[in-house]
Length: 74
Image (cartoon, rainbow, N blue to C red):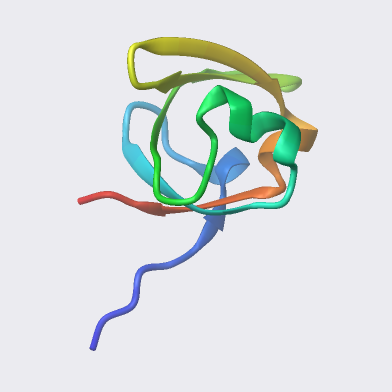
């Protein structure tokens, strides 16, 4: 059985879809960043990430993205 590698969102590849497997920061679940939801990293820099969550776009800090765990959605 092949298991997907779980990584922090901060390590995600740009323009690839991921499924959230864990997010301990409940404040960001209101943005759609909850377990089982799909997220796409549109752009990154040394301080933040721009994310697509459904039809919405959000900017989150690198610090927050380190705590959101994801797997690649093939």
